Amino acid sequence: MAQTPDLAHIDVRYVADLARIALSDAEAERFQRELDAVVGYVDQLQELDVDSIEPTAHAVPASNVLRDDAPGATLDTATVMRNAPDVADDVYVRVPVVIDGEQEGA
Image (cartoon, rainbow, N blue to C red):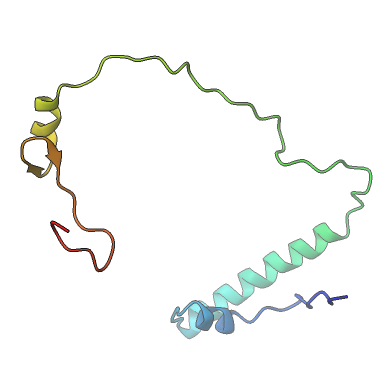
């Protein structure tokens, strides 16, 4: 059986190194205090007796509030193309490449 790690102290500098975040000494000190306070609060919560409380996914009941899927008024192509930042062949909206390695026109 795996042991639960001791979370009484989490080293902020270690976590910052894992995340490749540079921290000044002042930032590390401040974030260490804040993280210790959060961990202390979680320790307090773990002391609560919740055996008689049924687990829930939400604190309040949730339900879908979707509208009917009915067709409505749409914009004509000319209006959409007039508002587009860049257009190709008067019918396509051109957008910047978002995936590395993709070439324009590929």
